[in-house]
Length: 289
Image 1 (cartoon, rainbow, N blue to C red):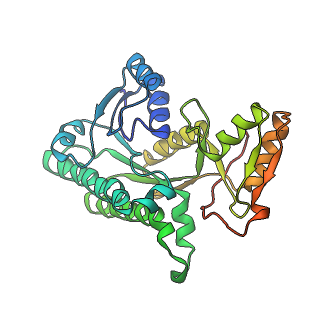
Image 2 (cartoon, rainbow, N blue to C red):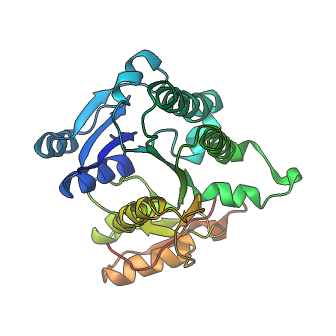
């Protein structure tokens, strides 16, 4: 029997890569996003038979019929960066907490009313929740709005899962990179691009330790989680999808420049400033540039 997947945030980096990988495996894939996919992604969707619907998850009336007869829901929608959440907390709450509540409530109501088998519900969260959980109350600030919203969404999913017997998994991701759909303005792609062009590579922060994970490793891990959820003796609900290897921006810049045998000069701007950018840690195992 062919598995039917429904992916939220399907136009995004992780959502689109997941959709394409699943379709290539022979799965039926559909999804929603309030942002239209880029042209090359839309072409891949059309070629592989991936159904895309332009939809906000808060639009309950249009969302309900799309969730019928689905085997696995992968919830990848929401604000994806700390800076975006800090700049617009209300948007972060709407797109993460409110949207998640709407989605999981529909799933619970449909399965209860129709008496159908509950779909597997997988939420793609963030390693920043793990970091947030380690903080003392006095350390919590507006910079943690993103982590707080993700934590709240996790708890809501857990509550509905327990109350309505919905099989679920929380997959906390790290700083995912790789593939043609990666955001070009993130740290690693920026370093790689400038190194390839032999341009100045500027390091602005050396306090944060980044834990990078390649998108293909994320996809394989999520498929393994899905298999695990199908086992009757499984009790695990939280999965941390990263390695323990980590790099500072300085170490990463050195690695990228040396890997490409680049003539780029590395500018350690953080040594000339007392300012420290506030980030949250991330990870990785094999480098795949």
